[in-house]
Image (cartoon, rainbow, N blue to C red; front, side, top):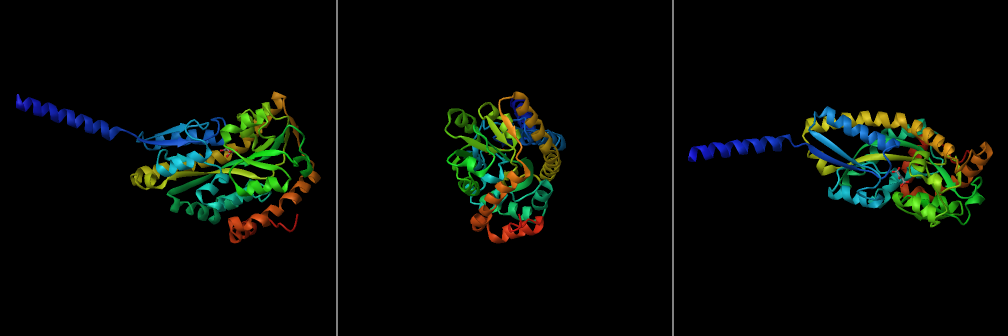
Length: 334
Ligand code: LMR
């Protein structure tokens, strides 16, 4: 009797050990945008590749559309380990104490994605990601979205059109200065609250790449969209450092590979997604889409580039100069 109980106990013990060994490592990946966006699609792809490459040892659960956390809360959730992975926009690292990321918010600093990639895919990008480590955060990659446009219920062709209007921005001091320089009133607000704030008139306008504008249905509540492409919005994919460092080395390597592939995809689809979203806005027929003339865009640029000098100290003059050097941008030659 005793022997039978012992054998049974051993068998149950072995079975539970086996099932324990087979439990996948779960990565909760929270983000604030819709699944149908560059970030949404790249994170879904990462989840799929992580599962394949680790042969099921890792399961990545994606939580889009702020369903777990809003902008600021998600950073805190990552730091305490309530989620393991995020991809916040580069404009949202100031509150974490890494103000240097706000250099990506400088208006007109990148002419195109080729210039941007000189930074995000070069030594400056790597040194920026390294600045996250003392915060308990590890930066894995930069993902593209694209260039932002302004919207409101009135046409936005020149700086004068921004005067006195309230614009929702992300939590970046550089973006605050950008709106102030235009004569507008900046209002920091979580992404998930923008649609309602536009609908109820809490704010008059906003800025975002078109994929965000369209997937949040902002075109339903904004009569005018001006394709200003005045600044960049992209992401840093980040993980809780303690969690990441504690992963078995082989699994970490497989996840790095999955991230590499997801990054290629993100950068490849970003422009397509934004183009597709612009078609959607036009087809919906509720928003007048305006393409500024070359002269109008240059005039806006001349008003906004002085933001660089005003905010240089916040991000560090050296960092700013190294970006100017790598991209060839000269604020004195517009
Ligand atoms: C925003 O808050 O406007 C963006 O950061 C949203 C996003 O993640 O693209």
